[in-house]
Amino acid sequence: SAINAIIVVGLNLLMGYAGQISLGHAAFYGLAAYTTSIATTTYGFPIWGGILLALVLVVVVAYLIGVPSLKLTGHYLAMATLGFGVIVYIFFNETVELTGGPTGFVGIPRLELFGYSFDSDLAYYYLVVSVLAAVILVSLNLINSRVGRALRAIHTSEVAAQVLGINISRYKVFVFVLSAFYAAIAGILYAHYLTFVAPSSFGFNFSVELVVMVVLGGMASVWGAVVGAFFLTILPEFLRAFEELDILIFGAILIVCMIFLPGGIAGGVRKLWERARPKREAESG
Image (tube, rainbow, N blue to C red; front, side, top):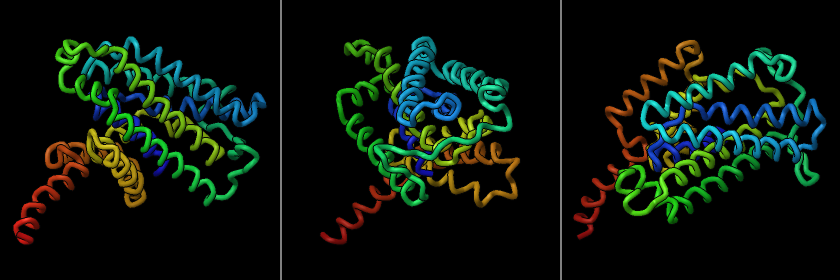
């Protein structure tokens, strides 16, 4: 769930703060996972080399996809990123000699950095939580900076932002690449933890789940993104009997949330707090 939270925090920067919809972030997640796996296992790269290659590749691909795609808006952008995700999924599935195809890619080494091997689950847990904490810290600083103010202005009105002298294209591409970079970090952690990757983990369903996590947790809320990721990562464990209906269940959650909790869990908590505060002040007064 902490690995998913890393992706969702980045996706929330893109959707919640910049107002850009992506249905292709599972592809960036998978691209990093497969790149580090193939580099270290098939081609004998050191682990740090595989990680670096995966990060660079995802950043380059995200930039190349983002520059033309982010000229689109609304559902056109969603469809463009969805198309990219489908292409990447087909590539994972069909290039059997390289990726292992539908059966997956095995034999990935456990993560080892600076001479320390993260063999135990506890050590890996602390590593992932530390990375998540760093991602949250960077994101909180970003949204309170000039970049964050520019993203919010773009979300509110691109025309008004342009009048204010904000380079819309540059900021949109920047946040798109940054969110893809977060997804790449998560993909690397995922691959070296499970030591196995398969295309089914990076398909359209997972992209939808990520979007639902953002909406459920609360758009434009870093902490809401974390809550949404944890909630919807744990939820499938209680719905194993309905595993084949998971995409329908996530869709239903999204609809219910948009109707009854448009601000997500974070927005709902904020409203309850604001309602309770005058009562406490009146009682104390």
